[in-house]
Length: 85
Image 1: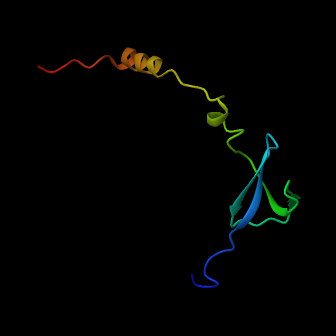
Image 2: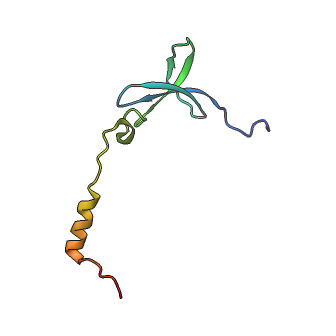
Image 3: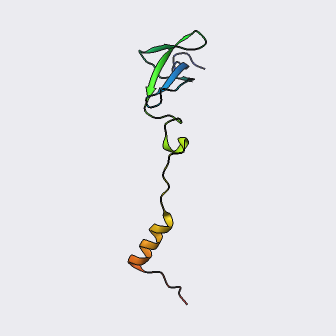
């Protein structure tokens, strides 16, 4: 790899703003805030709005729309299509 071309890729702790859960991963993002991790090292802390712990799809709180009801409403409004023949 060429020196000075690629960004610094280092360990970073991300924290969910809603649940407070944290996880350690690697990223190129920087932060002025730091946190001491369970291994005794200090890492940059980045607070994010949504993670898999607070996202409706991954947490199981997602709402499912009634697709069959929408089709029936469309057919009542515009009628059903007659086959050609």
